[in-house]
Image (cartoon, rainbow, N blue to C red):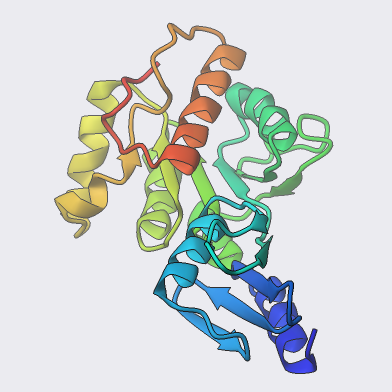
Length: 239
């Protein structure tokens, strides 16, 4: 790999920016594909760029399906993240499930009686206020955010940051009545219908979940559906 491309790839990893390294197996010439550009000496036509970006979006490495060219793509993407606002029982179940699915999990709760190492021994834990924590964590397009506290002072603060971020998933726990009141507050705070439509609320898919573990399972299933298939709020009923 040329030094310039290597430096660019290292910078992309540090910035959590997805990239795809494409190598012509016959010539060894390479290019680096991003969602919004391409760099390197390897010439890629529209078909190759489209195939490369599709593979990057799917986190899929391998030969690109192109006739007449042998192009190998290596997808270099940051691990997905899950930010949980509320160190509650559901979070205790959801955090290890998400970790098994490959997510880096951060739990946010300024209530120190909830946010303890004993309750979350294996996860990043912060007692910052949610808006401060999310501003520091800088959610990106590979970040999911779920609010679980039922406390507008905490959940709304987090949602305000989440809705101004490119997070791929935003979910919020609560009944339909609670969610309607939440949307009203956020509307009064200046968010329009298009922004509010990003929130999956009530959070989770309809599996008849009752226990914290079952609710956590429904939430992770919905996050997975959004990440893998692009499901939109309202396409699954809440648990």
